[in-house]
Length: 397
Image: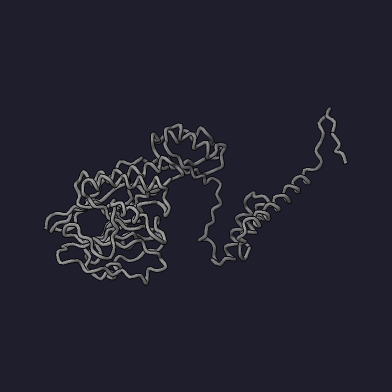
């Protein structure tokens, strides 16, 4: 068979304002446009997208228009764009991918084969966990001219993924598909991974932009060359904004100077700075650290202030009942210098059999506790002394 070349991209999350930043939203769009450029430059026969084209089910109109514009070079070069719906963008009715399909910018894969050369492509949208056990995953038989079959999905599957919420065995998917699968092209995992399961190549494309501090790889795409010898994948890195992920640990006497010293050890120019503050409470605030990082050249700054956190050693709790946990929490809180009103709020939240869903009633209850605490504080302070040479004004009755 002649070679068929397909670009596999996934998890572009267009419209995502990571860390509340418009700069990051632009970064995600730029990465998607880079991926499209790779498709054109490598003269691929098709592009497949395995879900989460958009970051949420209701992307803004500019985000949708930007996506449509980004796909125009593919149309101009006769390169089809095939996609499925991911869990982030999934709606209960018509999907945004359907809108792009109406503009001829994209097509949606399904359980019937879509032929690209001699490769039969299939697609199943992200499945809600509540219906996984009963949903029909069976695919139509490929036509006689199909030499290879690839199913696109947006799921977390073992043995490639562990410990990330509900995952399903890849072997189950292969069995329930009802046809012989040569490849299982996946989205949802934001890092590349691959394995062979029951004779089927299974792989994740990764995301086109870095989705969080724990993702070490830059954005990547997968280039597939398919011929008589098999499915051959090459990973292509995209040019994405660098991350600087580090921790600033404060001692009792540390302050702004210590924070600046740590910041100077990292190259923050144009980077996303993801900073964790730990250790003792210090005079410097999280906002001040944010400003220091910006002054050091960081384009985007996110600071997690974990100083003074109360950590519970759950493993040391002999009885794992709720009563045992409550006792451990109360013992730990007793060691902390919390105000009476703070402890009262804790009791209201933890001891209630069922939390009141009326926000106003809850707010009124907490406000009354705060007023009581204020009155007690003033009573404990006693009468205010009048400084020498100053007359006290008596209030009119």
